[in-house]
Image (tube, rainbow, N blue to C red; front, side, top):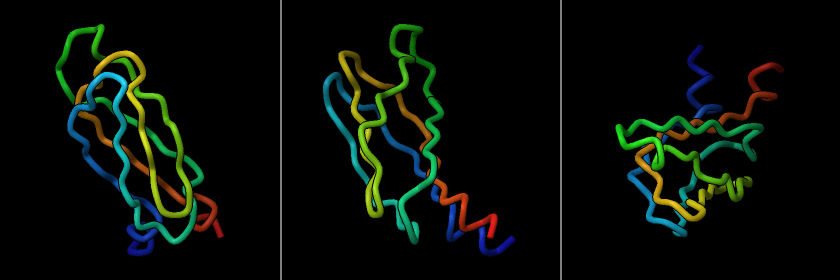
Length: 85
């Protein structure tokens, strides 16, 4: 189970303004197989739109809030195929 920490990255992001983006380096050994976004704020229904997952690659995950501000969220990036091996 200790290996899972090197294949799963969890980040909490503050809100993103409308039409703005946020990027972070995930620190995983490869490009994530999937990225999950969980909204954690308590904003109104209009502000609970999940951001558009713009890009993820071997070093970064980028999110973009299209047309509406995004509330705080938790982002989970995972390299699943390495865990299965």
